[in-house]
Figure 1 (cartoon, rainbow, N blue to C red):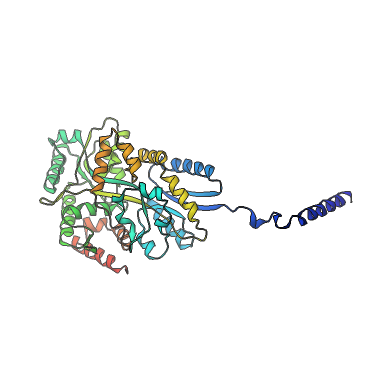
Figure 2 (figure 1 turned 90 degrees about the vertical axis):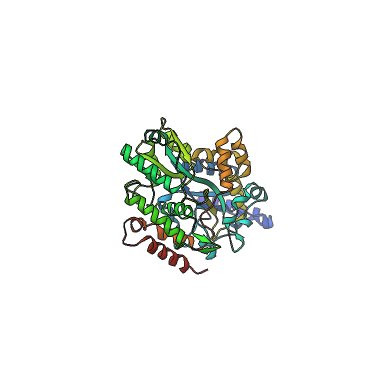
Length: 416
């Protein structure tokens, strides 16, 4: 009884206290609500997840009113993961990807130009801006970039009597044949797996004087592209590529080259920091992507992008703060060095180019680079369609022309 009486007196006291305070009494609606950012990042290496976990911890310490829900997902499964999230109407607020235009066309994305601070916008390289707009509206920003080149094992080239990397298709064929004949080692590594088949198709399309698009329209089944795919198929049929183009991925082929069992392959500039680190004694060199005799040399680049989905809890101010944090110079430079990428910000690019001629050369190449048509909403459909076409490209039953005719139909089937 005494306990009940004491509780009653305390309750009455509290009521009296708050009755004289008017609207100052605490209420659930007045408690500060935290903002939430669901962030899905692609995993590039074993260093990726620790980097982003540390970044998120630092951000939440500096901005305790914003929670970051982080998922770091392997590139091999990231497409299926985000498709599941979207199908459940639970998209991430921010995602690191290599696609975006179909989401923009479907009205799923926030305008990125409304999220960028003026400081961050000024830091981004202007020459990377073109692929990030649909209908004149910016829906993505570059996060990391690479340039692609031909990398080769110098010791194997020396043993085969080759002094320079091949610059043309005829030189590529001769070099691969010499390595195969003299050393009994696979000459040219090709990735036609579902991991990155579209990359090698691109190299041989552009190398033939073609490309995915021409004058803003899909041109996948152009005569130049057919010629490029026919040449690639012939290299395989004559045993001048590795034996398993549709099975082993680019990363696996890099290790094979590092182990001295592959003469050359096309890869990104991250090769220069990853492979020599794993294979200390490797002597390697690089050259341009080979082209058909008479075709102008080209530089090919790749950008991974950040996009922001519309959600039921979108907080533009919180997203803007987090974007600034992601691109803060020291923090962003750490990511670039860890993963072996090229920066997309002028400030970090300038700093890393100091006394580093390799970085300077790679960034100069990036300024001249051609890119995937990621700005076209049909690109995601086309890319998906290529994933399982490796066997058809190399072994039939479809001819190169039939394969490219089919891809052209798929590209045109996406309504503008």
